[in-house]
Each structure stands twice: as structure tokens, then as C-alpha cells.
Length: 226
Image 1: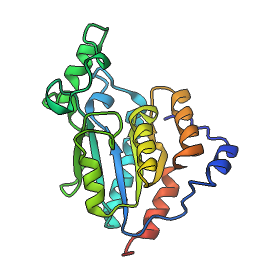
Image 2: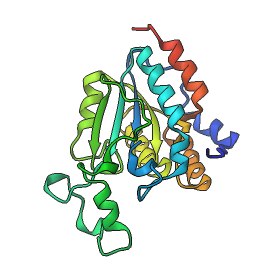
Image 3: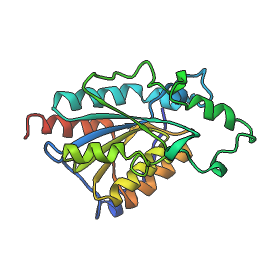
């Protein structure tokens, strides 16, 4: 588990713009970023023990959200070399070390593309393939359409990597007008330094950053609210 170190001065400064003491009643969604086998399973190219450490908190938050009648969304990082969702060729050069293997692992039909087996995904949850780090800049547009259809005002972000897909999605969501909470101990990076750097910048400018315990209390308070 990461050793999270978020300075109080950052909490205070960031709280001027992004401090949320309660959920938007009936208008909050949980967005779990890329809790896929490729990023968690130790046998996969990007398997990360820090990401495995957050399986419990992510599952607990998902369970609590469902109990409160609030939507749970899972994203899957996806790579395609064809059609409108393909990235520019220069971004992923197969000639560079490890890139071809990574591309193969993120294809929609690859075993690593699936959500990690330990994730507790309900039939009523929404699973979205995304083709960019940021779920809201993805050209497929599935997350934005889903949030709009739900009337979402606030999103809670968990997942991996804190400093890549989680941070990018949080920034995009803030700029799109959503209230954003990033869960500090339900997000994971490769190192404590990267994790904490992302949380620091998010707290200063783009999101409230709270531990699972605080978010669970907020979900419980929202249970039964219209």
C-alpha cells in the first residue's frame, strides 16, 4: 500500500475551490479506472503490486455505492490500431522496448484487457472501453454520454495509475464542470513519489482528495436521498 503524504497546506489551499463534505444527492457516480488484469496481475507486463493493494478499497466503495442506489462505472484501457479510435502512430512505436508487448496486452480480445478477477463487478454496473488515458477525452465518448444520461454532477475516482489515467480523467472532469473526489488509498501508481505528486497537484487545482473511510461515510449519508 502506498504511503500517502498530502501536506496540510495543500489541503487548505485546494479547499478554496474543491472541498466537498457531502455527495451530490442522486447525482454522484463512482468511476473505477482501469482495474484490469494487465495492470494488476503479477504475470502481466504492467502488473503492479500497489494496484493489487487497492482491490479491497475499490470493491468496498463499489458495494457501498450500489447499496446507496448510486451508479458504478468501470473503465478498461484499450488499444486499437484501426479506425477512429487509434492513437497517432508516433505515440506508441512498436520498435521501442516493451511497446509491442504492451499494445498486444491492451487489445480488446487479450486476457489482460479484462477486469482483474478479484474485482467485484455487478451485472448492473457499466463497463466502458476507453482509448486514451483520459476517459473524458476518449474519442469514443462513452463515459461522457453515460454521465450525462445519469444526470451526474459529481464523480468519485479510484483506480490506476494515479498519475496517468486517474489524474488525466480527474483534470478533464473538473474542466468539464464535474465535482471530483479522488480517493487517496483507492488509487495506485508505481511508486509513492508518483502517487503523492499526482495527489498533490490534484488537491491543489482539480479535486478533493479523501481517504476511503471519509468517502464511505459520505456514501452512507447519501443512502436513501433522492
